[in-house]
Length: 304
Image (cartoon, rainbow, N blue to C red; front, side):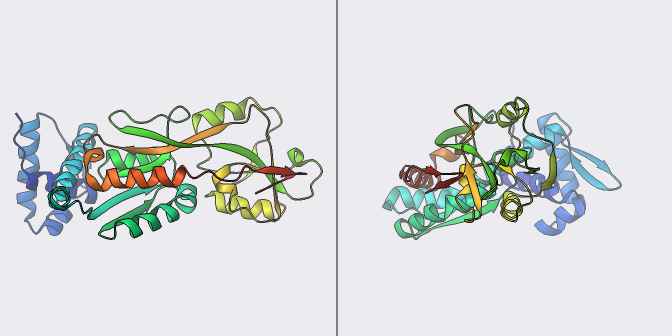
């Protein structure tokens, strides 16, 4: 059995966060030599090099990244113990729950979820981080121990990282967004954004010979909507984003083979058993289970 103590886990987390033994020591109130000794002890116990040392500091190895993520998850579980004890004795859910989500989900789904959470469980404090849906995305925040739960894209249209539990909440379609009144929206220049790139969407995208290369690539979907509204081009966008589209943007059906994406939550098996995360999942399911009015298309515009 590997005998690592919580203080050693805190050292590993701090070194990874700061990329420096000296900065980690300052955060933890230790000497640099004590941090260095603690890291070496962890590496000896685990039988692997966790950090590459150099003039520019300390960089986690692949093994180190995995260990640090699990270390942070363990530390987080230790933090939740008092709230778990109180909740088990009284039924009152308290403490904090850390949520990671990408922008359109955070903008459209989280406000209602958080309002219900505050009304039903005033002792529970949500902490929300908005994460770009690129690379490891919000699911990576859970793996790295920086979030308890993520609201993100899930199977089958996005792969859920190994070791995480997931639940599907809703499926949303993609639409063609174009300036209102344009006779041939598909002839317009394409405006795209960095996060619009799941593997499933891209497969559909590559099969469409009418979609040109993007002439403008924005940082987020809100900027894309603004540019479409200004008449600069068309875009292919998911339904959640288009809920905030101005009246000057037409939403046009892409047909029966249009791409979709699945929105859900991911968490670790251990965090899924904690009262705050279980409570949040119930609130998320309650909010996303509320049916929205079926959209109807009026000319080139989709009306609510």
